[in-house]
Length: 363
Ligand code: SF4
Image (cartoon, rainbow, N blue to C red; front, side):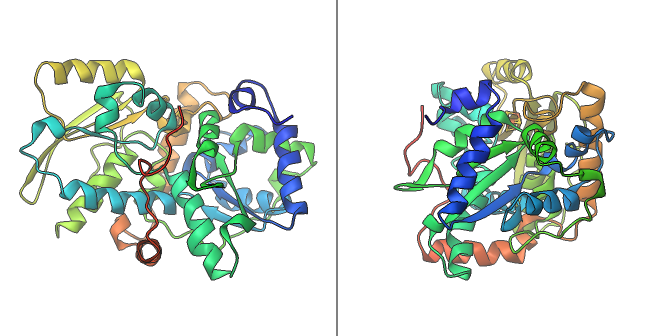
């Protein structure tokens, strides 16, 4: 009998996952994996490496060895939602204080909490997560490129987060999920060991078709990254090239007033619900924030529950290396990503939305 999401989360169900994915390939379906930013900086720890080593290419090779037909890069999904989010933010009137802050929605732990609280729910950003945005892209834009139907593509998110398994409950069209399965970093490590794959000797492989994110897409993996991505793209949109570096630190609450064009924004990024409560007290005292990033885990997804066990020192190392690697990427912001333009034009033409509220929300 198929296990519920809660059973998958609380009890190790790697065998069940492998069985389900094998059954899909037997039906002739195309198996697509996508790798979240934080995974690549911690998967090596499953094989005795130190924290923070960038194993992007080896993780792609590993997934190919495990039978995936295509491997895509989740940060491209992050770029897609940043561009959409900036567009929606600019439609809002900053004088309507009661409409703010806009809370980010990409952290599933926070999102599930916020949906149960009227204040947070009404301020939650409408965009789906990067995992869901790229799953949607694989089943629409990419399926069209390879002349397949959405039903023929199975998307597996390789995520740092056990709670991301909840995202496999959402459908963007009747009977068609954004993402079909989620495999955590720890599960991927265990799967490689089960198949006797020697991770250390893997040669390394490039991503397939859907990759090319901006540096900001990769930054989603550590606390402050979503805020940086949003503000950088917002500045680009308003004709200013701005380096937003303030949010690249490990503080639980990062607050900053930012001036972009005529906009004067009060922005914050928090991780952990204790930090959120502190920020909320400020809002109760009358402080207006316009944009707030909330991540449930220590330092964001790098410290996620699907990652190899780690203390704060290791998590900090992962965040440091992720930020360093992101800085090397070519595109300055999500708005400069040409692949995003191409995908957005396709989704718009087909009237496919990146917003979750148009579909059934799961309790
Ligand atoms: S911050 Fe934690 S709970 Fe939220 S998406 Fe990342 S890993 Fe999951």
